[in-house]
Length: 116
Length: 112
Image: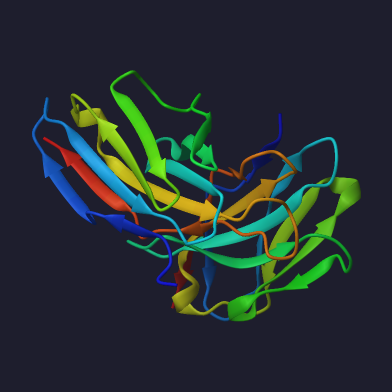
């Protein structure tokens, strides 16, 4: 497996524009996580899905943020409209269900978002 | 709610010196414990993990961590640091039915 794949790697957009970040989890993983990383706030969990269902979105900062997982192999994180304070690195991660010796969160390379 | 603390925001050590990064967790039962490393511009990579059994676990790149139940700690150690170890290190916990919770991270700088 190629691991968790995120696209794009870098995104520069103007304030007010819509931004869509994409993630392909590892095949067979039941959990998918979206994180945001900034210098000020560190690594924050935004939302996570289990079997394509959003379980906890309490970390989503505002209604401008939305996430979907239409199927087991694809998820999007959308920001509309974007603002400069949304500039950060956004990570997607996936893991298998249950807990055991193989439990591990696998991270993508991240998307560096810059809103100007 | 479970939480993870890493008391040291930034640590600087000389190359060849020993290293210990601290991690404490708060949870009713013993969760599963992890250390991840993030090199500049990269995603997070698993260093090691603890589930049960021997409280001293070995990981990649010469790292080890020791689980101490009485102190709710899972400190990461390395006997001799290399310049390539400069990175950010995250401790994480997960428990049944819960999501991964990450600590705030400790940035490690290595002096030549």
